[in-house]
Amino acid sequence: MSDAPLDLAVVGLGAAGASLAHRLAGTGARFAVWEAPASSAARTQERTWCTWGPGAGPDAGPGPFGPLVAARWSRLRVIAPGGAVLHLDLGGWRYRMLRSTDVERAVRARLAAAGVPLVEAVVDELVPAPGGVRVGAGGPLARAVLDTRPVPLPRAPGTTTLLQHFLGHRVRAARPVFDPGAVTLMDFRVPQPAGGVAFGYVLPTSEREALVEYTEFSADLLTGAQYRERLDAWTERAGFGALEVLGTERGVIPMTDAPFPASDVPGVVRFGAAAGAVRPSTGYAFSVLQRQADALAARVAAGAPPVPPRPHGRRHLLMDAVLLAGIASGWLDGAAVLWRLFERNPVQRVLGFLDGATGPADDVRLMASSPRVPMLAAVAELGRRRARGALER
Ligand SMILES: Cc1cc2nc3c(=O)[nH]c(=O)nc-3n(C[C@H](O)[C@H](O)[C@H](O)COP(=O)(O)OP(=O)(O)OC[C@H]3O[C@@H](n4cnc5c(N)ncnc54)[C@H](O)[C@@H]3O)c2cc1C
Figure 1 (tube, rainbow, N blue to C red):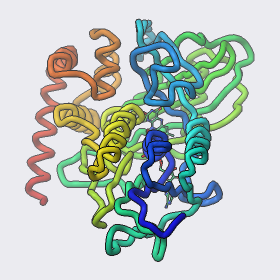
Figure 2: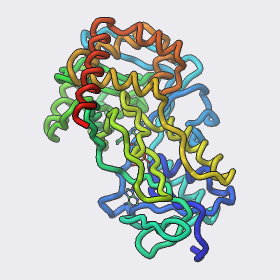
Figure 3: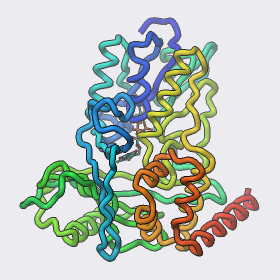
């Protein structure tokens, strides 16, 4: 790296950093990327990212990553606690799965081809300096830094935080039990936690192979043994029979309406999950990161400060806050609300909402399809929480 200051330093090559780096590489932007070495505790584990949207081919995305999509499906399934099944045809849309390892490999190759430095190091400090920010004490100077390193879970009076936590197994079944054409998005035939929601999730890649996950939205994590028991009990109930475990994916994703604080270092802008990109009511972030990365790349090209647009609109954040307060307090039966959303609305409207892409008219229709009295109780609960929070501040 030369001594001249960089225009931009990108810290982290996860979903946010990789999405931006892919777009900037080859544009002439003077930037470099820092990523924690694979051997370090700071390094994010491999994961599977799913998104959805219009278009069936590799040019349909997500963002520039369409050619990396490892599997795509045209049908979804949602299963009620009592076993009723909704079969949802996505029409011209697809539900898509990417592997973080494929994205990282492709972006590394693209950076190397464009001559963009990729520094394998744990960044502990971002130090304000004349003309910008030093990446690490005494490290290279950048005019601005986009920091995607994880931050502690924000808490604020009057807000609600649940965790989306799960155990997934990549499995091979003894007999053909999966429908490779359909994702089971939510199978609610599992015991529901108090103040939370639980469901099974199936991403089938063939009649015998799938990623099967037990997922909970709740306040507290389980022990390793509890996750395994619940996953096994549900796969048995689902009738998958004997399953050979080929791999494991665990995750904890914060679902919160608490604001994510900005960096207090001048010139450092947080981006990604650390800046609230994860949708509070769903745990999804990959699509919104594509929208933000497009906007950021355009700003960098225009020589504007690299500040991403807000990840979520105010109306959607308010709706999420109602859902979180309602579910956490027990006024809303999360499984019933989610089931009814899919039962009473076109699937593209629900998926559009989960992605933050719906307009006011669709949002009103979605709210109107929820159970009315519990939803009003959830709105009142949010009001109480916010009023209490205002007093505590
Ligand atoms: C297991 C799991 C599955 C998920 N699945 C989905 C999904 O299917 N769809 C969806 O939309 N969302 C999903 N999410 C939510 C969200 O999309 C992901 O959390 C996403 O990875 C967030 O991207 P990010 O870049 O902000 O953070 P990360 O992907 O975690 O990237 C942060 C990067 O910074 C690096 N880093 C950390 N500390 C340092 C340091 N000190 N120095 C240098 N580098 C550092 C890490 O190694 C990592 O590469 C999932 C989340 C989890 C946890």
